[in-house]
Image (cartoon, rainbow, N blue to C red):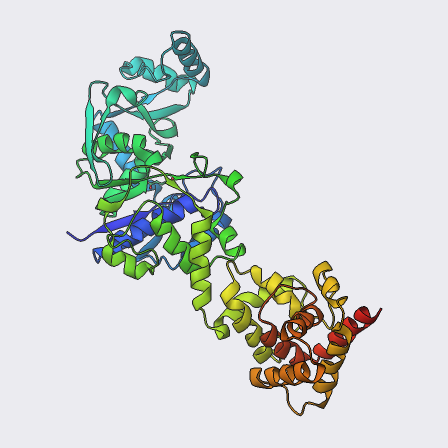
Length: 483
Ligand code: GLU
């Protein structure tokens, strides 16, 4: 049997981390078994589904590299299939039309509440006589189609994460609505649980991998498989993603769409790697891997039942590891949009080599891509305002003549392109001025970087020199030192 799994997102919002992690587990399982990963867009909720959400979901999966083998299929284009299945259930007597009005259903719930009972449909239209039914139809009452759920039924299925699962029919809220707005012979609008099962049967899905928030649906769906004479697939209910406080991760935790992560400067590779670790641990305790490498080792034996806490520090750490490995020639493509947004002035084509030198220098210090804005700010303007610490350094004794000597030496230097040339110049000035090397290095940092902290001084100097920014900065520093 060839493994066939699917991701079935509803386009009622952007691709969020929960669905993306479900996609990752489906992808890993499919690739591990050489099976098929199918994408099905569950857009039957006409009021809440939007084409822009579908686009966001497809683009997000593509950005993450979670390629699918079949689809995307759209449930909105498959309604006839669901209606046929509903007809079959009606014909078999396993489903029926119910005509309860919203007011009647409310009254039912109120009465149950008054008796401290859980709300459920009391199945009161299960046995309408043909006359009663005809009267309701004649009244023009809208109907729903309900699928019979026997209270006494025990439902069992095999769960790859949770072993054998059992559920009582009496806990499923009574006969379930599988279509709305049915009237006469028309079936109306098929609903989620029915459509999912019909599709999963039709698409020959062997394993259903989805979040544990679907467990109650699974119990209902198992009954539908049986009613439709289909084999029940295996299920894997994956743990929820929790915030640090242990609650389900939500928008309030600062994440909505996968593209928020992109915007925050995470790479797809790091996010994939991190999502894989959200609930799964590899057998070799390796923490960094590509999706393809994880697929080789992936199994549900090592997926936890307990919720997976979202750990920003771990994601940051992984992201930094990935960023540090990207060669400057590629890194620059990822960084320049942030620099442009920050208003830094440069020509992406003409300044390419110069930009790459900055990327090479600051790359190893990046945790998230936007860090390049702070780390890069040293290089894009002729002068910079001095920080307090830099000012303090520049006001130390001996600083002005030392910087003046550097400036003179720089003007005389035939070439100033290599680290060796910069070091020679510093050594010469140190000797000629008879000062400590530490003083000259600290003063140079204050002068050139306008701060006492930042990227490597000599590399930075060479970068600034290429732009002709080092001399004006030295001049500004000398002016301050002599003021
Ligand atoms: N459409 C459902 C959702 O987005 C998923 C259904 C499923 O995986 O069975 O939550």
